[in-house]
Amino acid sequence: MGAWFEDLPLDFTRDETRAAERLLVTAFPTTQLAVMLAQNAGVDVAFINQQAPPVLVIRDLLVQARQSERLDALIAELLRNPAVAALHAPFLALVAGHEARFTDAALRREPLLATLAAMPSTAEAWSPAAPAPQPLATPGFEKTINDAAGFADVATFRLRLAEAEVRTARIDIGGRAKGTGFLVGDALLLTNWHVVSGATPGVAVFDHSIVLPDGARSVPFADDWLVAHSEHEAFAVEVSEPGPPDGPWDFALVRLAEPVGAQAIGPDPGAAGADRRGRYALDGGAYDFAAAEPILVVGHPEGRPIQLSYASPSQIRRTDHSNRVRYQTNTEGGSSGSPVFNRDWRVVALHHAAGPTKVPVEFALQNGDFNQGIPIAGIVAQLRAQLAGRPELAELGLG
Image 1 (cartoon, rainbow, N blue to C red):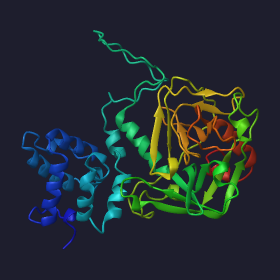
Image 2 (cartoon, helix red, strand yellow):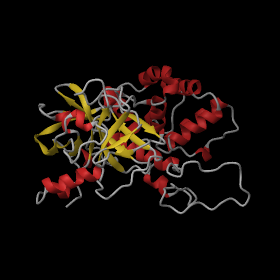
Image 3 (tube, rainbow, N blue to C red):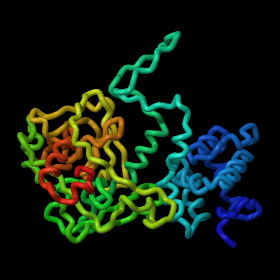
């Protein structure tokens, strides 16, 4: 007999199925909570009788989730919800031996591309470059306070956050968490030079999250791992008021032993039909940093499971020499090498330091007045110069 969650239709005479139903009723005791769970898992709520008692709503939800092949996503939603953390252990016992399956579902929990394509034309992600929405015929009491922050479509935001989650890795050196990096090619990772300098080849740990943390995937650096790099300035210069006058840029382009960006998300890189992990294209075009805009950082502060931090307004500003940017978004030791995003999820900087700090040679203390990144445009210019005539430029999409 197969696992209970593989039955089609679900067999509610099985002890495990009934136990799963009871746990879901405990975790989501109201119709509103059950419907939210369904929507987060991509289950069509049109087939759920929302007028029924909550216990029957949960049964309808389970049945519909299984019929639409969204039951894995539904279970992953429960396991990633910190509000019902007390129920994670008993539910994990019901899926014992199949944890990797739900790790994969958790990592791919965002809306399918087909779902996004079917969204109504009224759904929009409003960016500063987009036309302003038409005013209401009868104005209300609300108004836009911060044009640079604008609005973001929720489904698009979740999709972009999911991409950041699977393309960003913790970097371990000598078995210890040292920093963060992110995919900029199928087998190319961008991080800080100070994270990897002088170290033995390391490991990039993908999918290290609070959801089924045993599902993390470790990809070693290639034997010939250093593709390009630029050192950093002395720390006192880095965090001085004017900042470094002209480079260096504190980056390292690292080759991984596997083309993880072209592989499937989840613990099985060869999984048929699974979404590919993907990578970020580096945009070397000019970017005007605005103090009012939100700035987001995704990384592994203190080596913890992947975290998002954001500030809006971020108070981001260029240094006097324009070779660094400073912002109020939170970071901690281990955030070095994190991608820094604007509100449209464009990678605009590489995080590398906090300052000023009490220790003049420390890049990762938490007591600074600002956090600091390196504009991507400067790094792209360096990569074009260092890799001129080499195939890596094409791998980066810069050839």
